[in-house]
Image (cartoon, rainbow, N blue to C red; front, side, top):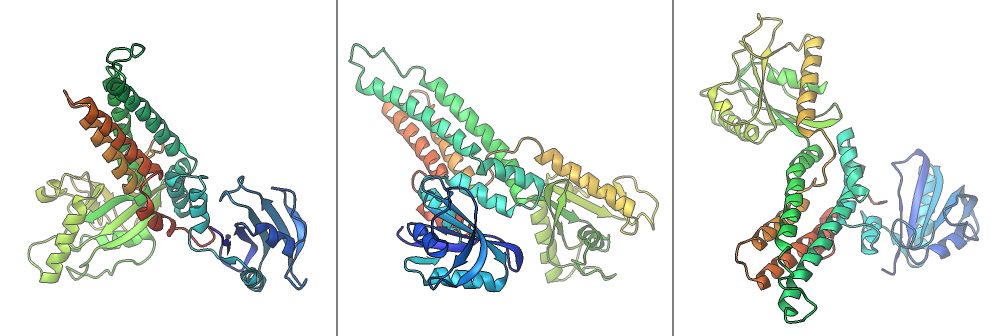
Length: 432
């Protein structure tokens, strides 16, 4: 990496403050060109920032982070300018005119931090999720990953795998040596089982982690004109779905994203379930059933309060029955009474949904939160389970332990990660 990269690292303009970050071998040259002597490392200095002709661009703060003690592991400079469009445009144009400097690509600062060993893939993913976090639960989950909790756990697993493999290979290669005890690998099975159990527990908790990141999904089902779309509009506090008295108005799936009790909740409106209807309506009903079968919770609405029919119960998903339009009907036998015209009933429903999400997603933030992470752990667990097979030759056992270590290496980014790097770092903004 010979280029020095730069970018606006703060938010959109205009703003009270704009932070421009520079990273690479030409950072000292940039500092000397713009403000003269570099400031003391990690201490802000108020300076007049000038171009190569000595003309002032702005007056602001300059900071210098020498390698390797910086985010990217390279020399890094930050310039804190006034957040006007003209100020930032002039400074970025000046930087782009200097030899060896170019505008950073999306996520390139973080990619350099990864390449220089400042963070591993799980920390990079946590950082991306922290930037994208919209709820308190997502923030806690992402902060744990970005802080290195998964990296530390994976490195501990990997170290223990190396030790177990060393015992097995010592039994293979040095069994005739007098100073090597007989059957030195005899206790390896206990160590493998303990490792597998720990990984399986994290995989189980990871189902919760992926839901925290992606959102607790609630699918709204019920017969036509039960008030599903009206309820979704009220919960969303905006007109998301078209509402009419004509049965079959809703044909496709409509999503609404809510923050309930600090948890991301995705509410899905669906076509009313009934016999008959045209081809388009039938396809809408089919899609609704498919989405409901994969949901975390089904919200069943009807006006009678009779509860969900057998075909919906048969989906095997937890159901919360809602007796709709209680302002027009007497309370039903089942369900929580709700009217879109009664704010108290809507608040009770929102509280109940928040409780449902908390009961499924609450507790300590898990480590696994992405499909890529789960796949790597799945591979490690599968090879460890193979290694526990009775009567397995020690040569094969050693190879299975090696494969498990490689799966953990892919998890943290030690090996075989080039194909996933682009998709991970492209999710960052330009200045990160």
